[in-house]
Every structure is written in structure tokens, then in C-alpha cells.
Amino acid sequence: MRCSATVAVAVVLAALALVGPLGSGAAATGEDGKATFDKLCQGCHTIGGGKSVGPDLQGLADRRERAWAEAFILAPEKVIASGDPIAKDLVDEYDMQMPNLGVTAVQIGPLLTFLGFAAGGDSTTPTPTTPTATTPTPGSGDAKRGENLFTGAQRLDAGGPSCLSCHSVAGVGALGGGRLGPDLTGSFARFGGEQGLQAALKTIPFPTMAPIFSRRALTAGERDDLIAFLESAPDQQRPKSAAGKLTGFSMATAALLVLLAMGIWRHRLNGVRKPLVNRSRRRDH
Image (cartoon, rainbow, N blue to C red):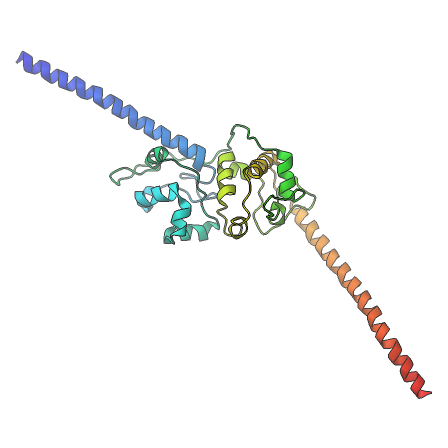
């Protein structure tokens, strides 16, 4: 009996010793997944905080299969290119493609666990989180050169159009920039800092930009400089008065061109009309 009791105690102690490391390993996995989310995802997504640049990921494990989520996070461009209907709906709804953020095979498991997925298909509830401003280590880009590239004062190596032709950003020009694309003020924080912007500028996941920059890709140096400029740009949005000034300036320019055209054509008409009138008068005499 004494031997049996000793064996039983040994088995219990061994089991407790095994459970301890496994439990701490599971906690570490959850923490690793949260760290990956905070670093790569929260610039565009929330968990329970509502839509942001991308969808709210609360309850993602209840809406999507684990295999789909894994494939989409690891290589969103491939899933989109395959014609996947869910991916297509997301692109249409948010008017942009999710960039490839370089999530690794080591990171994907803990990240999916944090997002509520379990190996057996059951889901857990991740801790709600909202995006916060990112404070990354300073990049290697030149902010002044980035501003010149943004405004078009310096041409892009591949000959692509300047950012200002479609976008505006606070602090650049009295009249701001174009309105075809969104205002990029505060985009450094919205896209998760340098890493998020690097992914966006490298993959160009935006439907309007992709046809142009797929053939005229930005160089690594240009990406670094543009990111440094966007990081240093003021936080406030372009004032609404700037858009009014731009509209007024455009209307004044159009009116001036119309008056100039009328003046030119008037002289041309007189040049034709006078000889005809003089010729008619000579015949009358």
C-alpha cells in the first residue's frame, strides 16, 4: 500500500509539473499574438471598437473559417487575385486591398489564437482593443526629400505621378492637393507606423493606384523618404477654406481663359469681316 501511495503521489506531481509549463506556454502564446496584433494590425483594425481603415475583428472566428483567415493574413494579394468572393466584397467595401504585412509562419498561430480561433475550430473572445498611435523607432528616410517627392518638386525615379496630384496633406501648399484620393494627414498612425506604410507603398493595394504604380514602382529609398515625410507632417487636417480657395482660383482661371479666347477670336473675325465689307463697298460704288 505504501508503495502504491508513493507511486500515485509521484504521478500527481509529474502531472502538475507538466500542466504548469503547458499553461504558461498557452499564456505566452496569447501574449505573442497580442504583440503581433499591436505591432501589425491595430493601425487599421479594432477588436470591438468598430470599423476603422479596415473591419472590426471582434467575432472574426465566428464569421470566417480558420483556414481562410490564415491564408488571407499570410498572403492577402493571392486570395484577392484568386477571385475569392469574401475578399472581393472587402475590397469593394473599403475601396482598398489589405497589404501583405509580412506575418510569418511563427506569428500566424498565436495571432489567430488571439483573434479567437482555436485548433479545434472553437473560438474564444479576444480582449477588446482600439488602435493607438504608434511610436516606432525613427526610420532612415529623409523627410525633406520625401516632401519634394510628395509635391512633385522632385520626380519619382520610375516616372510615376506625384502624390499631390491625387492626395492632400496638412502643411503642404496654401491650396492643398488633389481630392481624387483621401487626405493623408495622420496616415502614419492610421497605417500602423513605418511597417504598415512600407507594406502599403510596396504592394500598392489601392485599386486606383495599382494600375499606375504596378508598372512604375517606388524605390526603397523613395518609400523611406515618403514615410519620413508623412511621419513628420502636422496632425491637423487641411482647412476647409483651402478647398474653397482652390475652387475660386480654378473658376477665376477658367474665366480668364474664356475672355482671352473671346479676344483672340474677335480679332480673327474682324480680320475676315473687314475685307468682305470693303469689297462690298467698292462694288456699290
